[in-house]
Image (cartoon, rainbow, N blue to C red; front, side, top):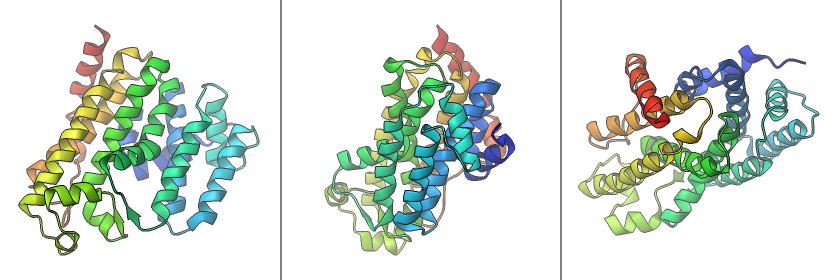
Length: 277
């Protein structure tokens, strides 16, 4: 049975304008693969964020296993099974993603910067591993795709600190909070202190370094260079907005307006052309 592509595209469009706009620059077949992968990942994230707990997460994982076993039931499982018939998307990437979702189930407290980057790999670097085969990248590209996913997730974390605090999730590592002299009590009161800005500048620099490394893999892709470039440019635009608003991510949320996303299309095509050289 042909997957319901309208329904899968709607999942992408509703939950991530950034991913959706980028996916439009893939050829038709690869675009469907991107939608299938994103929908599968998104519904796993929803299993955690909507309060379903371990039971909901386990139900999602069973769906992943059914898709890999060629026995899909739900629409998203059929989409994923369709993609698996065409590309070698590693099951290990979904297994690692599941570990990241398990982290989100309870109160989140990370200790070190290495632990933060591991989390970013599990919930987003894994998406890079899933997308690399669809874009025609080999093993040599996979690590670059992981770095790009980590950069995007780190950007999400920097954008959503205030929102995450409300859910008892602290992704800022304890060692960095202590090193920069940041008090969580101040953050919960919405106080953007000089120490907090310095911590965010440190992590912003880390994210930008990951973007540079990740985008260096564009030249290894068979298709979708502009699609990947556009997604990365949009996320970097969120970092730009965060900086412009004085790193206040406690009382507001940095985001791009539709016209700002459109303005990035020529830059994405230029970046894709440069990577072909």
